[in-house]
Image (cartoon, rainbow, N blue to C red; front, side, top):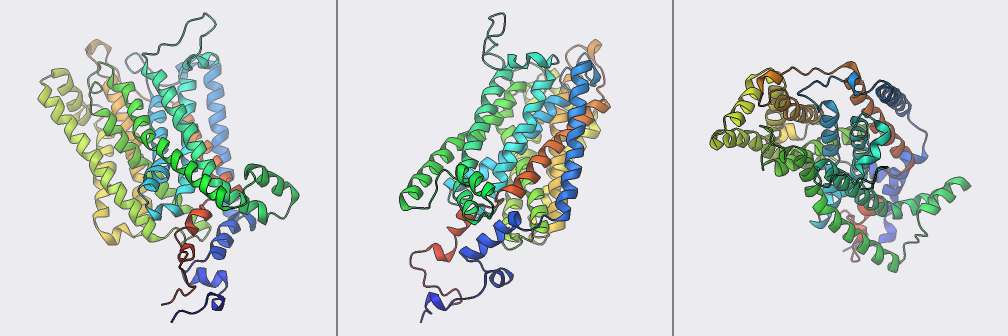
Length: 462
């Protein structure tokens, strides 16, 4: 016989310790991250992130003053770390939209604990990515040439250029992701407004909550809007990195001119994006004691997705060699043999080790549920994905059709400082986000609890 709901009087904190959740315990835990005293570790992390951010500003300032000659670009390698970093950061942002949109449409309830900061990660990663095309043009004061507006000589940008396609694709992706993230935040912003103890916080949260009161009509409109945004965002997961891959695929350069790039780049983007979600999830759950909300089961599911996408990426690596051999094109064959055994073979084998061999650990359940293993693996995977872009860009450009043009590309300190500094922007934005906004979607987690069932009787022990 079921016990009446009013007899369940276990405090929220005790339920959390037991691994059980209620509406009140979830609200207390997630809002506590914002309302309680800021951990000392957060200040240390913010100080490190701001230091890296200053490095970014300094390196960009010096670049504007001196020009792109301070980078390691040379005659055959006109694209260096800037385009590598752009593609890498855009890839990082793919997991957030996939978790939010595609898994939402597939009704995957486990996404609710990780979707909020994965969406935020998308916005911050795309912000980092957009820096590099802007500063890569050299004359940064005419960066507006990238946008589809006439310049001062009434000449429109070249709409046949894939670089302009990037502006449309990434700009659309950022806008849709921002709307999706903000729409999901509205019920939680109203919760923060109602819990605020200062007038300033009440006003700020009240403005951004858009008058949310949680009525039936509001929930109906909210869920419809969220569903529509999920439907809009889903094709963007596939289209954005497909468009980015056309920067390479529409050229005639050996190693780039191939139709496999769009699906290959999309799989790699999801692979690297989930690796970054894993890294941030492990750190956040440890610092803020969120083990009962971001559980080992959630992390294991992420590992399974990384195993799947890692195998897709490994398949793409092997099929590239097959296509080069089957085509009978001596230039294509040389490009891929040179990748594996030429001057940049060290980068190629780092890529293979991190992207193909490391994910194989996740075939074993014990390793798939071991936090130290998944943390190290997630970092190695993103290292490997950066080297993938390095191999694609540099090894192909440095050995083109004419041997007289061949040269070896080496980055300068300014290439390195700009890339390292971009992490400062990313982590500064992320650390500020987790201190001022709910990093986990309270309203969505509550929808998967027993209490959300209209037939729930209040007994969670039978």
